[in-house]
View 1 (cartoon, helix red, strand yellow):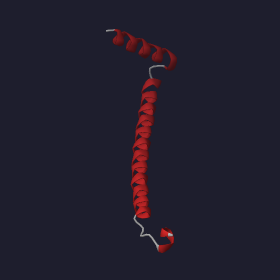
View 2 (cartoon, rainbow, N blue to C red):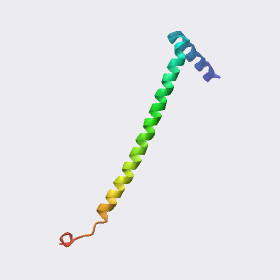
View 3 (spheres, rainbow, N blue to C red):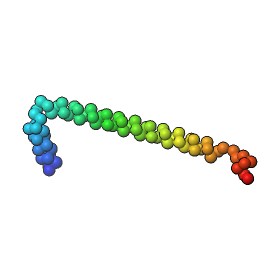
View 4 (tube, helix red, strand yellow):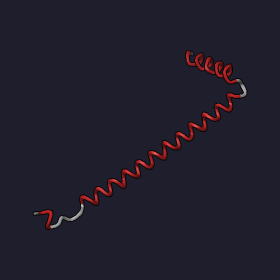
Amino acid sequence: MAFENVLLVVILIGVVLFGAQKLPELARALGKAQSEFEKGKRESIRETSTEDTRGMSKQDELTSEPTTDNDIR
């Protein structure tokens, strides 16, 4: 019940500060901003995981090189 009261107060303050006509525009803008943030987050995670797998492949290549006579001496 306390959450409902807080939500009601926040909505009333929003109406007083911005007006009833401006609130839907603000809600749309916040929704678009959240969507863009989530999209960027997913892309960042995808790029990071791709870089990690590439880095591991290069490391495997470096460790699997055959040794030469110079390395033994």
